[in-house]
Length: 145
Image (cartoon, rainbow, N blue to C red; front, side, top):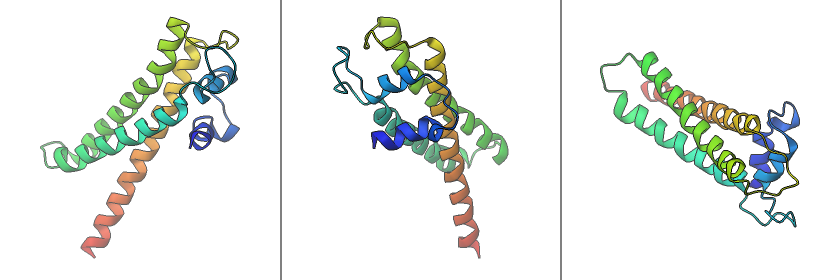
């Protein structure tokens, strides 16, 4: 699973938006630089992204859909919230390690790397939210037919 999320967040190797050192930290490079014995952050952040997106999707379609907001407006607001929540979840993990210097000293991690990982997670959360919305819309069409 770590490899799956690593491939996903590194955009299949096509457009890396953070450094290789950040990727090594997220794979679980130990503080003592002896191997991958630390927490595999790719996995934990990936699972959090899925859970947050499912939760916000459920809230949006079950609770907010019946409100007075136009459907496009509240979908856009929910998508924005999905992006922001997932960005903060992914940004905070490496940023706290960066600020406390609790990572392998041979790795060079910057704040820009933390922002890049947050953007990657937020974007994948938005993609997942859009796919869920599309599947829900298609399910509603088939139920009406």
